[in-house]
Length: 515
Image 1 (tube, rainbow, N blue to C red):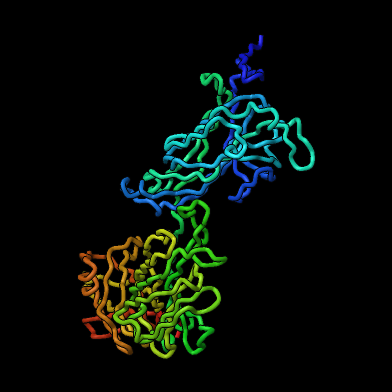
Image 2 (spheres, rainbow, N blue to C red; image 1 turned 180 degrees about the vertical axis):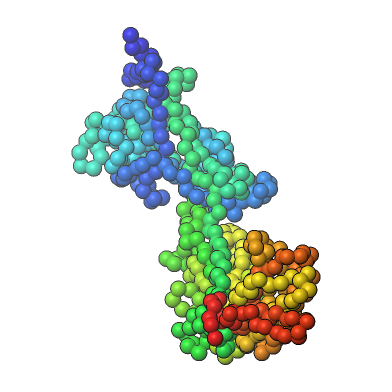
């Protein structure tokens, strides 16, 4: 048998199915964003409430400071599951979680056709006298003794009397919160829940207001830095590498490389008035999220003689250009005015196109923001890496290179630099028979047009290799310059030299060519 439990509310008999396991549940809903409510005006379509992002930077992790911040002006509606007829007497209790109420609120009862919360009409409690009392406390808002006035529920709405209307819900406006120090941490929330109960018998609950999260603490505006990547220089070019760079449209005589990209999220969280979303620009009258942007770049690319300028630009045009007189020692520091509405920009370095480049490792980029007038919603300072320059050069391989233990013949490696930059050569030594790497030798810097001759003993000592009888080597030689390598055999008994290179291993951009 399907048992029912009966409640009497005023003169109305309500029933809940005891064995169904499902309780009647009211829900917190949203409605059009207007904050001006006129009794008898259409409220419009409502939907289940969705949590909105509230800027965590409004608050402090120190409770005493955070709890002094008042956040307010919000409005929420509670949609009833039951249809409370005009003679029903009910009370509503609304409770906050994650914050407390400021003890002030405006309340309206919502009239609707039975079972509907769409296209509703409503009237203020204060003006209509449809509740015995409104009590606004820090921990709850109580509407007591509402309804029970049949002539109010059957009032004329629009042009026709709606005698089938019922109480569909309650509209709470002007709700403010404080004591929300937990919202200083991203992910903290403010929620609402409560009860709808029999005003004549407070132990009888008509409905439970399902708990709903209405605000979630979020980083209001975030940013990140992306390194500009690695530009590879061709060491055989004169000057070095410019075929690998981009020609500037602003100055065709200059060639550019990207140092870094800075991106800022375009959507901000709500400020303390719970209605204004703060964006990173001043579009449509929105308060600016930050007043300025400070950028510092430390990079070996900026200390080269070829550098002509550093440019910060958005997708359409340069924002600022800085010549070498504005920075020194590989460090450029500058500020950008946020009034241009920046959400992202790139930083590039321009080279003369007539002066050789050197290799440059990735540097650092730091970006800070000056606070605007929106209660501290600027992005946090951030840091990242800048782009780099690597020099292409030659790669050569010499095989059957004799170890120093061979006394009949001696092997020598000759490395020639015919590029425009000096630089060392790197020699990776492998067992010629097994291919196993045995060690690495780095030469002294080889000047332009210089030939450096290295003996097997020199290589073994520099690479930490102990010569063993019968072990020959394969040498993989590379350098950030244009050049070639030769394998020379010397016969100490006859004093004769022989070039065992079937060709000179040479390249200008990472490949191998035959002269």
